[in-house]
Length: 113
Image (cartoon, rainbow, N blue to C red; front, side):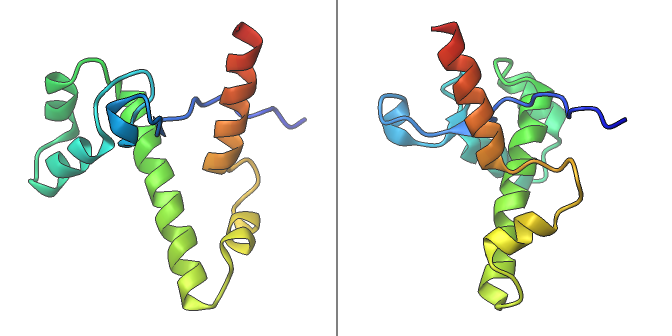
């Protein structure tokens, strides 16, 4: 019997009312770019998490997964091998796209309002 994958919240979002639309970790005002800057500088994830305690480890990892998914979709699309849609369809069963996660988050959030 297949089990439904655990619900994963949207890790990064843009809202014109939050930091002028800068992509930030959901529920925070911490720009995603800050994590990328730490990684680029060679700093460990633990240091970023210590410096920005409002960002939980699971959220940071989910954000990196979303970035990876977007990068692969873009690369495959640019290569002409697969469109972004075809690439997403080719992912193993149970792999969820950022859009699916975002849609589920919005539905869950709407239910709470």
